[in-house]
Amino acid sequence: MEKIYSDNQNACKLAKACPETVQFLMNYSKSLNIVTYNNIQFENNLN
Image 1 (cartoon, helix red, strand yellow):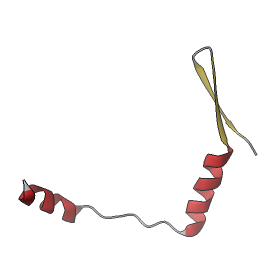
Image 2: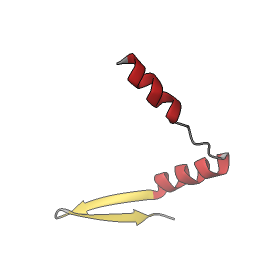
Image 3: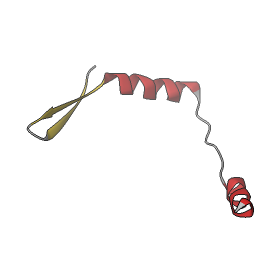
C-alpha cells in the first residue's frame, strides 16, 4: 500500500495562482446569490 501511494504522490503538482486571480474569485463568490423557489434555483450576480 505504501508503495502505491508514494508513486501517485510524485505525479501530482499544485497549481499556483496570482493574488489578483484569487481576489477576483473571492469577490465573485461574495457577490453570488442563489435563490431557490419551487425547486428551481436562480443564480444572481449582485454587482
